[in-house]
Length: 265
Length: 344
Ligand SMILES: Nc1ncnc2c1ncn2[C@@H]1O[C@H](COP(=O)(O)OP(=O)(O)O)[C@@H](O)[C@H]1O
Ligand SMILES: [Mg+2]
Image (cartoon, rainbow over all chains, first blue to last red; front, side, top):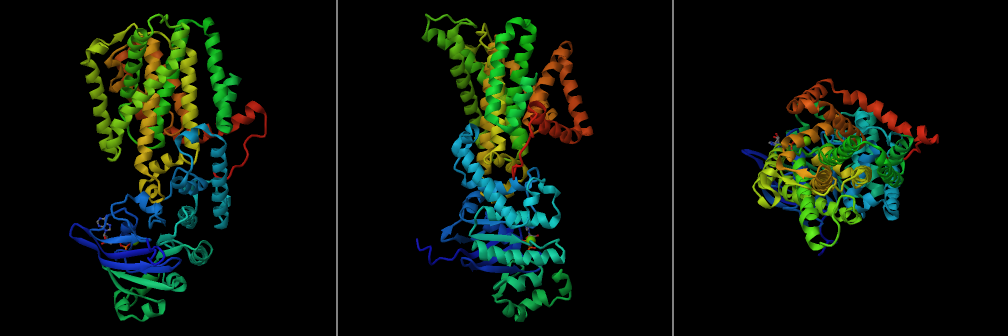
């Protein structure tokens, strides 16, 4: 396979319909390794729906998706994730009964060497692997400033930290593509600044490509090298932040609306 | 008493040491059982069997969040399988051995018999769980309810196993060692499992299936695994039960029996193996008290569950219980207790 030449993610003419409603119509886009791409668009534009077809939560009504050249159609979500994709959710979905450290540990399950029997036997190799996972999870948490919270119930974290933990959990799966769905939602301005730095750092230190859905223009314009604009399920523009800002279609659909301030929130 | 406390605390810090200590206690109990009156021994055996049943159902209901209404049916599969082996198969294969409850031949062959019972029940678990665990909660409840009834009706109409009259004269092989040892092994397995990174998959499935799948966790496989492991231990419990009471009939494994096990899991706080084990012991004792009430026992259970749902003592009990358990190591060994382990 010519995985060297193929894009990390290649979405070809994907549509998604819910009954009569078209959440996505004929969406095509590509993401290259290590790229940081912003996905913007007004509420209901289909951004989360796009994430859902990428991750296999929904099957696209038509079109196809290739991850490093491999078709994801028909694969269950956990196998699609193992192709190298991890995500966060617009409405945070942490494992509420697990503490912070354990939430991160769940990302290692898909790549475990030990299964049921070895976990019960608790032999030497099992303990070595558990130690390694503990250390790696601890290191990731420390990197994102959450090490103090490792034994706290994930539910008890402040909102901004929960969002960050979700990112850490996704990163622990060692994805080549990270999908972030409105990670700054509900954050205060200083948390947003932190998040911006964090996303930039993830990209440089982990080499992960990121597709970032975000309403906050300051966040998106500041860090993304390329933007894709969705409106009513269609890609209406794509290009550099400067091009997008100048694009009349985008201004009409999104930036130029009277509630520009609202979109900035 | 201190011994069992240290076994319990060892469970939480050094699980394999806990397993060894627990098995030692089982052996000691067996040695001392000559001094116990038969009734007390019987109640202890029932308590241990209920611990196995409740702790194994807890893996399905408490840890993985799947509703199962047929645990007693898996128990029946194990009970009948093993009764057939010890009653018919073994004596016909090896007729010159002396097949009595305490003969060494029966005692030694009981381990493979228990395993056979467990494996057959696990197979039954795979057959029910495989297709139905792809469905959502309500369907699963219906499928398992139906399966429980099917097993009961099948047994009632199979003459080889005595039909509705059941099987009697089963070899009384079960003693305190097997029953308590079985409970210890079950508890160890479940605790080792849910503490391991692998075992966190059960919790992830329970908490949020969509997020679990997005993290690469095969949610269906975890659900089926929980179901099969649960059925395996239920089968072993069934086998222990059959060889303790020496008589089994399809009615003994009906829905009410499953319900009784569910009560133990709920009282034990769903998803806390030790709590569920304690609840199983308490319910066994309650059963003995309420023996005269017979039919009204279920009413009492239902009332307890309703009270539990209304008062939710679990939420208030939980911190108290966790505190107690976390103090156990220092209570019993006087050591500085727990070391800070990053993600525990
Ligand atoms: N599960 C669903 N069932 C029906 N309609 C849905 C579903 N998910 C999303 N939609 C619809 O699809 C459209 C796009 O939604 P979404 O992808 O969430 O937008 P965005 O994330 O850009 O705000 C909306 O009109 C929404 O109501
Ligand atoms: Mg959305």
